[in-house]
Amino acid sequence: MKYVIIGGDAAGMSAAMEIYRNVPGAEITSLERGFIYSYGQCGLPYVVDGRISSTKRLIARDVETFRDKYGIDARVGYEVNGIDVDKQLVFGTQASGEAFELPYDKLLIATGADPTMPVKKGAHLVGIHTVKTIPQLEDLLADLTPDIETVTIIGGGYIGLEMAETIHACGKKVRLIQRSSYVARILDEEFAQHVHDEAKKNDIELLLNTDVEAFEGQHRVEQVLTDKGALQTDLVIMAVGIKPNTQFLEGTGIAMLKNGAIIVNRHLETSIENIYAAGDCATHFNIVKERLDYIPLGTTANKQGRLAGLNMSGKFAPFRGIVGTSILKFFNLTIATTGINEQKAKELGFDYEAFKLSARHIAGYYPGAQRMYIKIIVRKRDQLLLGAQIVGPSGVDKRIDVFATALYSKMTLPDLLDLDLAYAPPFNGVWDPLQQIARKNGRL
Image (cartoon, rainbow, N blue to C red; front, side, top):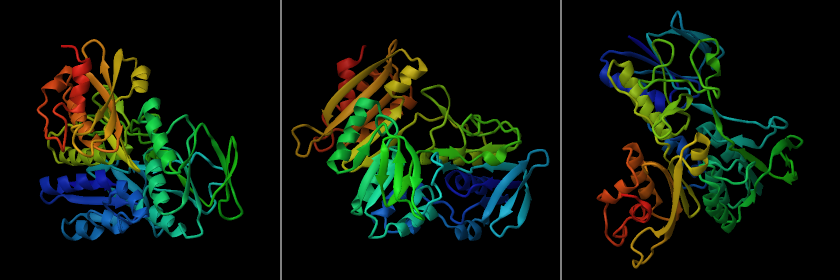
């Protein structure tokens, strides 16, 4: 049995390892267009200010490990340009320029996603960076010389906010441009104000409702042209989102969403027999929305990859779905969300209620207690949990994971009161903040 995997990172190599464990003697070939395998992309921003000492520390398993220890034909510099679904062939070009063709019995597409570059004019100038891969980050690090004073970050999502913090820690002046009225769009607007306050507290120049139209400079970027005027800059980081890397599938008949994400079923199968997909290039079933969704996260990529590998190995291993849980650090603030926010509930037509609470993350009388802010969304008719947003300096991660587990289990607001959660004054109040909001608003 010939297994071919396109993509050598989270989803692809999680699948490869499951095939290796479950199919003795399997012939596994992985094709990576770059030259680095299995690394933690989410750790990239923290290499900038030295919190993580080197990009090498982000690599979980190198190419040689896959080849020598597990017998996987892990290839680098192999870019796939197309698939012949009738002949079951993958074809493309090596870094040397030489063409290749490879047959498969089962194929996994795990090509991830690429950063988008919506601003075309001047995008070729030196000093304009995206941060998605180790080589891209190393290019940025090489460019962050002492004479770089002002860095402009475009986009206020996960990467934009994380990069703002770490670039600021390097002693640079940071400007963050967001085209909409608030950053951290995973939150509702009133909760994003906490993020705005944290940005101002740390001298981040925040420009909202601002469209970037072009970049200008002789050889290197010198100005960012916006609909509100020109801004001087020494370096630009584009962090406006990603797009599934699936353009090479044109003409294959593989079903995709409008954004290019490959539609998969619970077993990670595509619309074409013997072809699977997983990770940032694929759809994810959303348990709360009860429909296919696209929320590309490293946790989901690893889980989907693992299950794709099991299904390709002949095991019954359905992917049960996501609830859309994410968290990020922004200076002294933790920002977390799971399920849907109020804006999304309106868009989807849910008949919902929203409840808010401000509470201490531990017993209020214990030294160091800090305030967190919680907003939850429930379905009106039965108080089924639909989503939560939590921001604060401490204790946010614990609560968002509890709520995510409750969402996955389809619990109601009153159900939270029955949870047996850990309590001691240094760790919690006798009623956890999630239970406090249930006590105040839950209908039994």
